Length: 339
Image 1 (cartoon, helix red, strand yellow):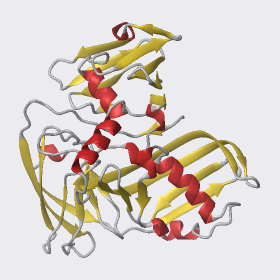
Image 2 (cartoon, rainbow, N blue to C red; image 1 turned 180 degrees about the vertical axis):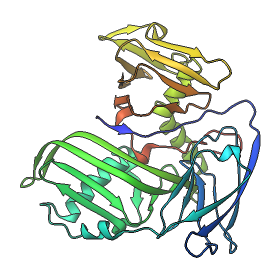
Image 3 (cartoon, helix red, strand yellow; image 1 turned 45 degrees about the vertical axis):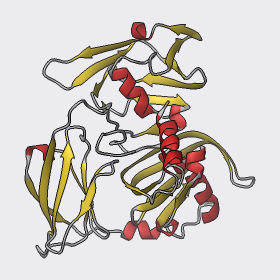
C-alpha cells in the first residue's frame, strides 16, 4: 500500500444537538476508581479526565461520530463506538503487559537509534512546513525496530507521543498503535532508502497551544485544510468538487467529475454511497496533484465527511503524502470550536 492513512473527518452541519455522557473508570482487579484517566473522542479537541472518584462527564454533538477513547498509562486502552445508545457507562481497565516491547529497545538491527528516529520523524510528522514545525516531546518512549530481511521499519511507544505543532498551534497526544515503513531499496552502508509504502494507525487528542499570533494560526490551519483529504471528502459529499477548487482527470484529460463519481443518497441514512468508475487524478487549485484509487466497489461518506471503509481507498501524490503534522482535528470548523 502507498501512503495509507487512517483519517476520519467531519463537516459542519446546520444544526448540532448536544448530548452528555457520564461514566466511571475503575481497576478491573481491585474495583477501585482510577483518577486522571484520559477520556476523549478520537482525533478531536473534545476530552476530559476522571476525578478522584474515577468519574467523568463529556458532552458531544451530532457532528462527533468518532470512537471514544479511555486511556491511562500502564493499562490497556479501551475504545467504545456505541456510546450514543448509553447515558452512563462503567469502564474496567486491565493492567497492560509491556514485557515484549521492552525486549526490542536495544535490538541490534543495523541502524542506530538516531538513524531510525530520523526516518520515523520524516514519515510520521511529514516534510511540509507544518510537519517540520512539529516536535515530539517524549521520543524516549519510542521503540524502533528495523527488519533487514523485509526492509521495513516498525515503531511503537510505551506511552502516548506528545507532539507540539507550532505552525498549527496544537499539542497532540498520539497513542501509536501501529507504524510501518516498507522500503523498496535500502542500503545500510550509505543510509540510502527508497520508500515503497507508509502505514500508521493510532488515536489522537488535540489541545490548543497558548495563542500567540491568532491571525497566523487561522491562516495556517486554513492552508492545511484546503486540498486535504478532509476537505476533499466534504466537497465530495456535497457535490461541490469544482466549486471547492477540484478538477478531475482521467488518462491526462480533464473530465466531468460526475461521470466518474456517482454519489447517491441512502434512504433513512445519514450516509451517501460513492462509486468511482475508474482511477482518477485530482488537481486542487490548478496546482496540487493527487491520485485516488479504490480497491472496493464503493464506499460511504456522511454529512461530516466521515468515510468507510478506510481500507481500500488509497490516495497518492499530495494527499497521500499528508502526515500527522498536516492534520487538523475532526471537529475543525465546528461553530463551538473557535478556530
